[in-house]
Image 1: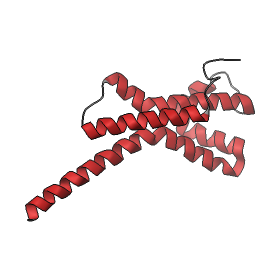
Image 2 (image 1 turned 180 degrees about the vertical axis):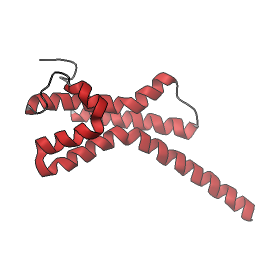
Image 3 (image 1 turned 60 degrees about the vertical axis):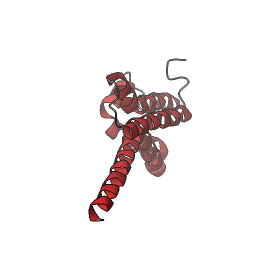
Length: 132
């Protein structure tokens, strides 16, 4: 009953996404490549925690009660998350879907925003120097 996902709450998923986003922002701002282990952690960490939370929630709701639900989630999460959200939450399932996708994609989005912001500042400063 108390497997590895027993203590996983949505708050833990949010904290994991926040931590991974901060790490992605730091790597983007410093313009360095993370080590392979850190790259896996930053990009996959939030997804792992979301899958663990979904497994826990699936046990609570009884939906998706199959032996390898976690493995199925991991392989097909872009399809399984919306199915599960609408199946368990009805019409308001889009909120859960958007929230979980946001958590999973948070580090990618943060990296892109920081990288693009730095590029914009550098390009803007370069453009100002060239046009003066």
